[in-house]
Length: 42
Image (cartoon, rainbow, N blue to C red; front, side, top):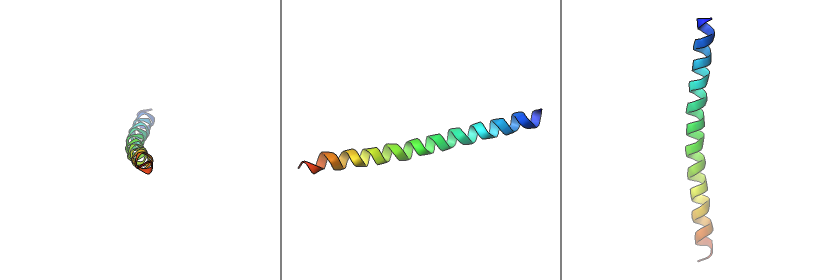
């Protein structure tokens, strides 16, 4: 039972870290796209 709890905790931590990393990367990409669109009209 303890092993399953540890496994679930490890999976949860891994998902949180992955989601945070992907979110940061997406924020950077959307920022770059927004800058390109804003500069396209100039």
